[in-house]
Image (cartoon, rainbow, N blue to C red; front, side, top):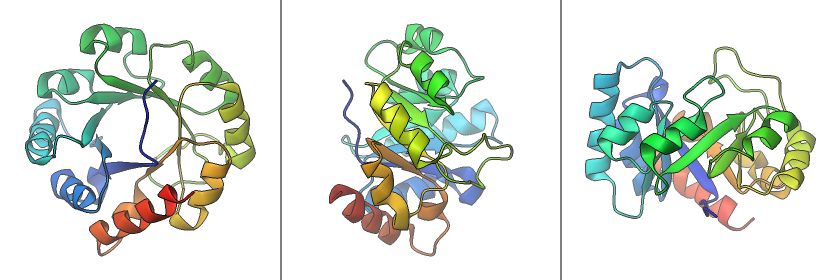
Amino acid sequence: MTVLPRLYAIADASFGDPVQLTQSLILGGARLIQLRNKQAGAREFLDQVERVLALAPPDVRIIVNDRVDVARIAGARGVHLGQTDVPPAEARKILGFDCIIGFSTHSLSQALEADRFPVDYIAVGPVFPTSTKQNPDPVVGLHGLAAIAKAVPKPIVAVGGIRLENAEEVLQAGADSIAVIRDLLDCADVEARTRAWIEVVNRS
């Protein structure tokens, strides 16, 4: 079973250059980072992923959001898929069994279904209200997260509206890892904020 760091950082291009953001996240200690650029075309996104892979130390796992083709060509460590992306079984055929595949779910029924897919972790959210998606799914909440964590044996990544102040209760609800965008990136010092996050989640 894939073991995930407690912090799953997401370098979202809507908060700046994802390459520079990733560099700051790495310097702050993040070791699992997803690159997310919903507006970029395949060529631009591929260039960004390749630049990140060139600067990332060997112990940093770089995950590509949505684009199985970009992950394959660039040689990223894996891909994160949503409900409407390439089916996990097809992604596994393309990427092989050495790559990490994550899958987004928004309810207990979706998480139970995803547990049968060839994925390494299941993202659950939004746990709290979030503003990083244009049309967010209904809030799962801590009770919903806890129910999913009890029912699903695969690693659970909690996502959506999670802040440093409520990170510990999210982990106590059963999450194995916390995916964070805004609370890491929407600040003056991403590197320092990342260090603060790692300090909190690693003691929980």
